[in-house]
Length: 110
Picture 1 (cartoon, one colour):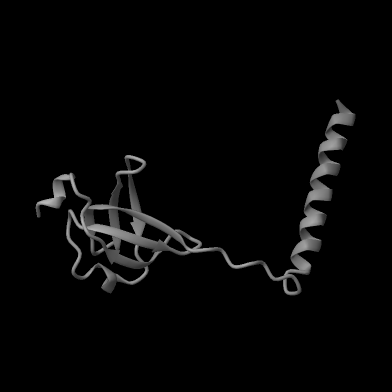
Picture 2 (tube, rainbow, N blue to C red; picture 1 turned 90 degrees about the horizontal axis):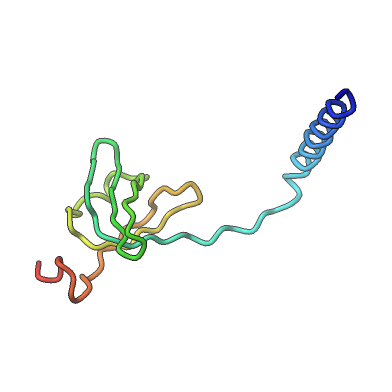
């Protein structure tokens, strides 16, 4: 039992020590930029005060809450609009584009 505890403590010390070395060189090593993530679907709800969109993705049949960095991006949007949203590394919307409705869906007639 003592050996098991000593091994765990040693692993933790090595992990923390290794992380410290990596963080110490963070200013030297540049990480590659992440590609922007895209999300497309239909707006199911808009909360202007909290700057949140609820978007239904027909592809995955999921509803997602998306935070919006700038509340002005919500202007002109309404429930039922089909959109493509560009997300940053934290998952916050940086760009929202309206798209045309897909033929055969319920919002194609509107």
